[in-house]
Amino acid sequence: MSWFLQNTNPIDSALLIITNMYTKEDFLKIKNEFMNVEGIKDVKYYPSKRIQVLYDNRKITLQHLAMILDKTGYKYIKRACRNCMK
Image (cartoon, rainbow, N blue to C red; front, side):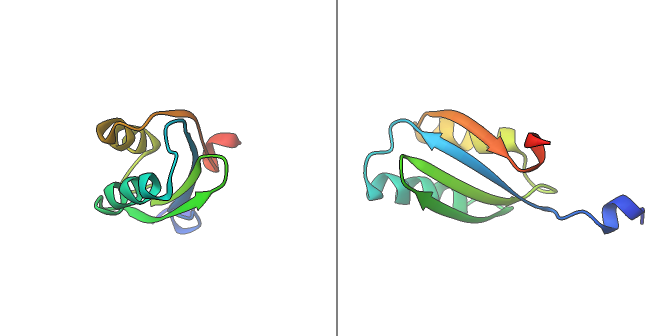
């Protein structure tokens, strides 16, 4: 196994701003949809229509997160991940 693979953290986080998430029920619908996907570790709610998704980047990518949101009908305006910001 290479040094890079031994020393990388496979858990990544993405911050998504959901434009049409108005209630806690909306958040729970989104969370349930994400938690049904293998590789998603946790989904947290933040004020101002923000959610944070913790995921295993060996099993799922940021593009997959966007596709899951599109499937649910919720729209996002911004996405960022820890590794994308470097």
